[in-house]
Every structure is written in C-alpha cells, then in structure tokens.
Length: 244
Ligand code: NDP
Image (cartoon, rainbow, N blue to C red; front, side, top):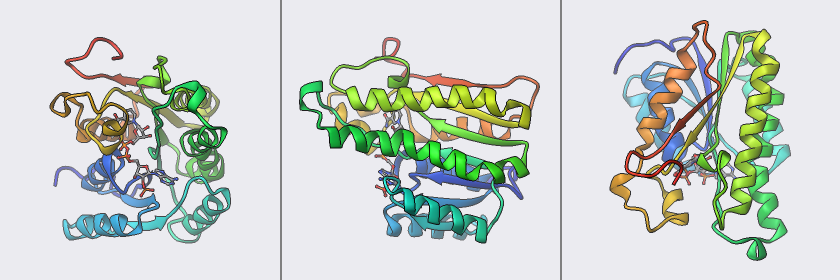
C-alpha cells in the first residue's frame, strides 16, 4: 500500500473485470478510493472486490452491467445514487474491438462497437454529471486508443468508435472546464491484455505496454489539480514506430 491520496473519493470503473480496467481498479484502490466496479462478468468482479478488501482497502461496490443495454445503465446509475450517492472519478474504460475490413463488417457489429465504446461513455457522463458536479473538483477519464488518433486498416468500426470517444472527450473537457470537472482522454498503443491478442496476434507480448502503466496514468490524472489541464495522454510502445 502507498499513500491514501484518494481517501474519501468515489471512483466508478467500467470494464473492471480484467485487463486495463482491473489494473486501474487495483491502482485506485491502493490510493484508497471507494470503488464502484462494473462489467458483465460478475464472478470476476466479485473476486477482484474480495482481493481489494482483503488488502485492507475500502470494500468496492460491484454492479454487473452490460453497456449495450441503456435501460441497465439507467438502473446502475440509480443504484449508485441510492448507495454511495457520490462520484468523484468516472473511468470509461470498457471496450470491445473488431478486426475486419469494411465489406465484412456487419451493421450489427458496427452498432455494438459504437454502443459499448462511444454511446455508453456518453450516457454515463450525462447521467452521472450531477454527482460529478457536486463532487467538483472531479474527473472523467476516457480510455480511447491509438486508433482514436490514427486510422488502422481492418479496424473500421473500432477506429470510428474510438474517434467518437476521443472527440466527445475533447469537446466535453471544454464544456465542463468552468464547472471544475476535468475530462481526460488516454490513447494507448498495444497493451498486454486479451484484447490486443485478438486483433494483433503478431505482436510480441513482451514488447507491449503493461496494464499497470495505464493505471498509473489514470491515478495521476485523477489526482492532478494544478493550473494546467491535461486533455490527452498518448502512450505508445517503446519498440514501435509512432502509432504502429
Ligand atoms: P479487455 O478485453 O481485456 O477488457 C475489456 C473490458 O471491457 C472487460 O472488463 C469487459 O468486461 C468489458 N466489456 C466488454 N464488453 C462489455 C459490455 N458489453 N458491457 C460491459 N462491459 C464490457 O480489454 P482491455 O483491457 O485491453 O481494454 C480496455 C480499454 O482499453 C478498451 O476500451 C480498449 O479499447 C482500450 N484499449 C486497449 C488497448 C490494448 O492494446 N489492449 C489499446 C488501446 C486502447 P466483461 O467481459 O466482463 O463484460
């Protein structure tokens, strides 16, 4: 355990069941935030919550949630308002990918990627804004991607969804600045999780960014309150050419 810089703060993390979201949860729990963990895999969330609690950190609130389901998102928001009724940090991390060229991308697949990667963060930002406003200074951290900056072949839908998330983040940062709510977007290159294996099995996993490296950035952003605003962090693999 390190310092307790987030003691008394409440953080919601989507996609906390594995990969980057799980690493963010461990990092923010270590800083003593009270966590709200969401994803579809209830059992993985429960195990993570037990791990965090047994390490002496605040017991997290676990909310199983499918982000494609707008009604379920609304119910989760209600649950948050009926329990913690506080939110200082919103981390929109959950995401899905698809490695297909244009002609093989079905409309349903496009819609699904947009729903999880872009629409759900939009809904959560909107529905939780009152809590974030009340907690100000507060933070929204959206996990976009290197593909939110650059176009990758055979990742049409994923690229579009991550551009959408990054675009919303940049606009929202300006919209909420005067309310002392800071909106940050992180654009990582390849990170060692299940996801990257799915779309880039050719990449040597030893050379990938570690999930904990992204989590450290989230912790920094969620605690930074200087005169400078950090809109965006781009982090890429040390061994790769820019954005590849
Ligand atoms: P993983 O596939 O390891 O984890 C994805 C997370 O999202 C899981 O916790 C999963 O939980 C959750 N999730 C997926 N679909 C849904 C859904 N319908 N409803 C709710 N939760 C869902 O991916 P990463 O950890 O690698 O990715 C995390 C984020 O980082 C994503 O937004 C991704 O786009 C982004 N990113 C990843 C990079 C990488 O190289 N890995 C690079 C750049 C960005 P569950 O299955 O339990 O629902």
